[in-house]
Structure formats: C-alpha cells, structure tokens
Length: 355
Image 1 (spheres, rainbow, N blue to C red):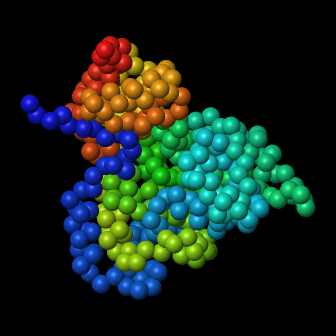
Image 2: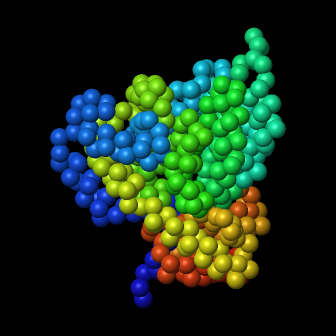
Image 3: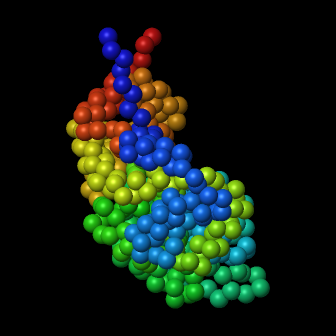
C-alpha cells in the first residue's frame, strides 16, 4: 500500500520554490557578490524592480518581513511615540512585541473589522494634541491581506482614507504587506495603486511568491536610507545577499499568476468543506487562506489536529475552535478533494474514538 501524501497547509511559506528560482540562487552563489551593504548586483536589481513595481523611490532587502516591519517603525517613529494599528494585526499579535521592546514605541490597538480601522477613533487618535504627558501618534499601520480575518484584502478606499488622515496629521502609514500581492490580485488593482497611500510597505518574498526566503521594505529614499542603518543594527545586513536576492527577483517577476491559482484553490476547498457540513470561509472576496470553525474546545481541537495529520493534512489552530489552512504552490487542484476527505476522516475519528 502506498504511503499517504501529506498536504502541509500550515503556512504559504511552505510552498516550494520553482526550478527557475533554484537555478538563479545557484548562479548567484557562484558569482562575485560584493562587500558593501548594497553592492550586490542581484540585490540592487531586486530593490530597483520592487521600488518601480510599487511606484516608490527605493526598496531594501531584509531577511524577514517581521524585521522589515520593525525597521519601518523605527525609521518613522521616535521612542515614546505612538503607533496605531488594528489590535488583531500580525504586527501587534505575532511579532514578539518588537515595536515596544526594540523600537520603544507605544502601540495603540484599535478594535478593527477584518483589518479595517474604525475611522472616527483613528482620526481622534491622530489628531490629539501632544503634551508633556502624551506623545503624538506618528504612524498608522494596516495589514493586507488581513491574516486573522482569513486573508481578506483591505479595500483601496480604506487604504486611501487612512493614508489621508495620517498625512493630514503629519504621520506616516505603513502597510504590512506580507501578502500584499494576494490583495492586489484579489482587488484587481496594480501594486502601485495599492501602495500609493502608504509611506512604507513591507513585502514577503517567501510566502505565496515561494522564494526560499527574504522580504523587502519599500518607500522613499530618505526612509530607506534610515532603514539601512536600522537593518544593520538589527543584524539583518546579509552578505552575500546575491543568492537570496536572485531568487526573490524571479519570484517577483514570475509568481503573481500562481497567487490567483491559490485563490481559486482556496475557494474550491471552502466549497468542498461546506458540502461536508464544515463551517469554512471566506468564500467570497477571500484569497489563499481558509478558516474552519470547528466549535471544539482546546483539548478536542488538538485531538482533531492529530487525527487530521494522521489523515494526511497539516493545519494550525487559529483561536478558540478555529483552524487555519494556507493554500500555496505545493497544493494543486487535485489535492482539494483529498484535503476535504481528510477533514471528514478526522471528524469521524473524534466521533468514534478507538476504545
């Protein structure tokens, strides 16, 4: 009997790189790279391409999107000043408190709706007059797509409204764009149009784009110049940078069509799970993330995850009674029925445990 294939949907950074990326990495690794922090020709080409793609002046390569987000804060916010973000955003929940611990900034988390900030509260927070006891809010942060809501893209109108409020108060807007291109494709707008309201945007190269690793921070020349020093201070000045940058450039140039296939597969998976009476979504306007509401308490949900893994599917818990699945290049359309059947098998295993 053949060994069951495991479908790993714990994150889209598990999507395998393409042969072209692997070959580009190998060529760059065998080429002279350079000594200075931005001397690598592969790095320069990647940064120039990303800046042009997003309609910004400059870009800088980082090891991770978490570091790029932190550098964006440190380049635009003084210690003690306030960053305003959705309380359920990745920067607030899942980046080890770096904004406070490293940047020394206050974080004011607002109760958003699928990543959308409450505009009246944001306007009041940005417009509050600072005094000796209260430092100003100098940066607003948005995340698109929004992870906790199941990969929902933020509407362009909201990005523009938040950007305008920030500019009017003298603040910046940073977009955590770990899945920025998923959002642009879902909305049917150009990356430059989506980036226009922001002073800085971070980009993951290793999520749906499937580069082996790497991220970018895109913005003005002045901000990127400050970010270069900050990156070095944080230990992110990779040298040699060529192999990472070469694969990342291939990813940016070739992988956007793959993201649409991931979105299509996610919708097919939602439909397949719903046919089996699982509460799965989002179905409309979603991207490559599927959330499944199990309704189970923590111990039962852990047993469900074990049974699901035994049936050939790896997922992660995503809050009380909820699981997250990320579609990526390693999951093709033929795998969707197998994944749905694994959920049915896991449910049956919980309903009829071996005695």
